[in-house]
Image (cartoon, rainbow, N blue to C red; front, side, top):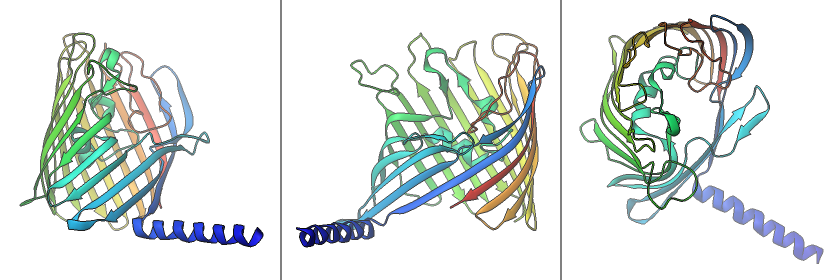
Length: 339
């Protein structure tokens, strides 16, 4: 019996190893933590924050006819509080070939991807999402979010141009019988070395008489190998309080192992006066190869009298709520380690 058990275990291990080899499995992750002093104009404090830290698994298998099947499972890891959520980030299964790529699951929308390409402070103090996200009542936050129950098509890149369409029949948990909260997002982009241009439209079906919609344009241009300019413009309509526009510019400069960066973004008033805000962030990175970055950032969101935008939102574990009419600021020292 012992001999049989050992043989069975050995065979199982060999089969598992063969499956892993055949499927080309990759384990990857990112640990991004920062020490932040946050101030909302009334209270302040120093915190440790885990910022979009993650652990993921990818696998792919070559099939007949030039097809490839692939899967990704990615989850948030809270290094600061010893916690996490299973499969809450981009997690999907898909198929790619000469026709393009099809995916099913929960993952970033084409509109969100544009922001990620041009945001110089993604997941840090000063992230553009502090002013580009919209709280849409019963829908919660919209724009710069992942679709649940999504299916997407991404075209092959032809002459540096590509197209993406992302649809969900029900952007919520559980089953649906009426397809309320149906949503879609689509984009077209042009990208070559040193230049990126993209446009996207995204729409959510609401449950309170509003169907939030955003049109977003994003771009970056490398003036030199060291100097990059970035921009994003967003027009959001049919949202609580009235339409809003968000727009701004950023720049980064590489100097040896250092990268200096800054960006400024403005969100306009809606139907109520003095509801806009200006976000400013400046910082520097010290690069130790691709895998390790140390950085410092200072950011401030200057709120109008009737506005309450944060500076510490967007991909961050520790956030400080804003106080209406008060400036929201943060000084952050961070470390990013990729593995």
